[in-house]
Length: 200
Image 1 (tube, rainbow, N blue to C red):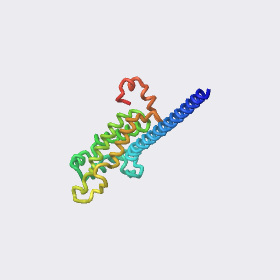
Image 2: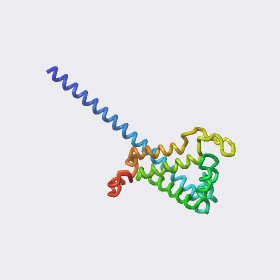
Image 3: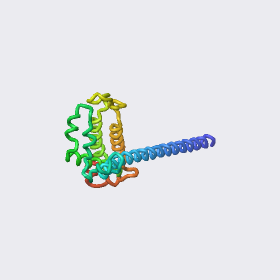
Image 4: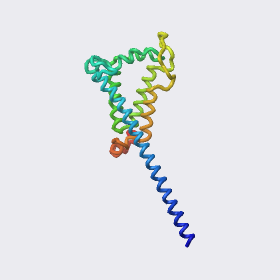
């Protein structure tokens, strides 16, 4: 009887420890999902804010008189002042072009909406990474001096905020972070999306 009682007690203790471990793992998983959702929403808001600031001229990076709806150009200021890197002349040629303005603004809006809502995260990660790499190339942090010989202001030759934003987009897409505080589950159930995983 003693052996049986001991065995039962050991089984109960093992079961209790397993339950506690499972609960701890589930709690950590929930915390991780919430953290990724916060990262996703925050990253999406960065793109949405940039879109609305350039569209309406909210007075932060874009003054009201330079707003797109007032005839300003979302790309002319940034690309027109590129002073470093091997693509300097290319970016100058793109600055203020109608196609560049539309692509840039539609990209900001689409990436911002998708990331904030938690849908089409893979497409948002790809397009957002391309946009961030182009902006990284425009600032060319590898250079310590501009083409005019002035200090470039670069503080890190490789990793700047554009790279961090791209990594954030890739991380939330890879983790399927749209399922928490987002429309990711609903999006994945749509017939077209279900049959084409790359649209998730």
